[in-house]
Image (cartoon, rainbow, N blue to C red; front, side, top):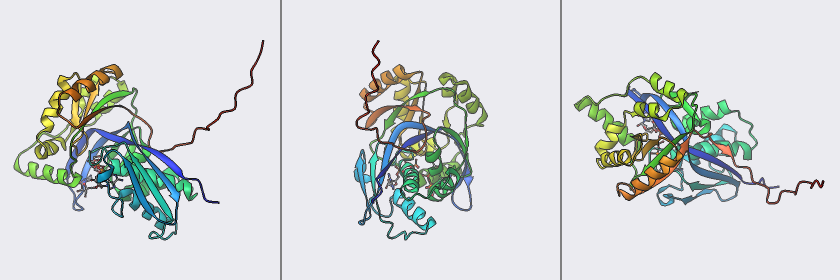
Length: 318
Ligand SMILES: C[C@](O)(CO)[C@H](O)COP(=O)(O)OP(=O)(O)OC[C@H]1O[C@@H](n2ccc(N)nc2=O)[C@H](O)[C@@H]1O
Ligand SMILES: Nc1ncnc2c1ncn2[C@@H]1O[C@H](COP(=O)(O)OP(=O)(O)OP(=O)(O)O)[C@@H](O)[C@H]1O
């Protein structure tokens, strides 16, 4: 019998704190970062098929590669190899439904890779534990382990070593998407260049932000958001300065560039305020589109089909 297709839903991330150290000999930068998973999601479906390949739907689908360079396909090949299958003939197709902006600094490709690992673990009945999946995830990219884990987490190393962080609140965000993406390596290179020329401010220690997360007070958290890559993203895309200003003028508590950008994330006091900020920001004409999101949300998760018809519970008559 052909196994039923497996679908996994997986969240985007924002970095609440992103402290970038110097470049290491392997080209990566040592990070101290706090990730939060947001309610903007992709869905990846894996199914057994003789004709391998990828279909991509949803926002920005046209700019996502459907060949071997798709990070989700690299996840297929890695897991095939790990489980003794032929990585060139894995016998599966992927269908990706994008809700996470492409090349937006919200780890969309990483999310798809994480979702693929989890879905294939189920489809191929590999029974790999979270730790083993996380080790494979780190081989695919620095942001991939967090997409598996979700929630709020402290990341060190190149971002792949994770510890969960207590966040006692749901935080409400407005997300401003730019017209074009930015390349992550280009943004890191720009930061190295800026640091040779000038001394851009560095974000401080992470502890105060961890305390603000534990307190659950968005006003306190807003004062502590920080991203070392922001100066580099703004240098490559100067229009982001206007977007960041417009979000705060619209009533957000604070705004930051998300990861390597160019997406900007604005923290709001509550859900109603986020809706008002989003409406005003979309009228300001500074970005392509605006979304409302909340976090933290769980990491990659199997989507279980709701039964089409639930049996009516027995009626009790007095
Ligand atoms: C900007 C962030 O999204 C913040 O979470 C991540 O640091 C980027 O993570 P990612 O897209 O998963 O990045 P990877 O696929 O691992 O690396 C892509 C490229 O980004 C740069 N890179 C990434 C992570 C890191 N700690 N230092 C780096 O310098 C390197 O040039 C690397 O070749
Ligand atoms: N599954 C995928 N979804 C989106 N882009 C992908 C995928 N696989 C490969 N790519 C390529 O990777 C590039 C970066 O895409 P992605 O959406 O992951 O960026 P990002 O969100 O800025 O990443 P990060 O925040 O992890 O640095 C895209 O321009 C695209 O060419």
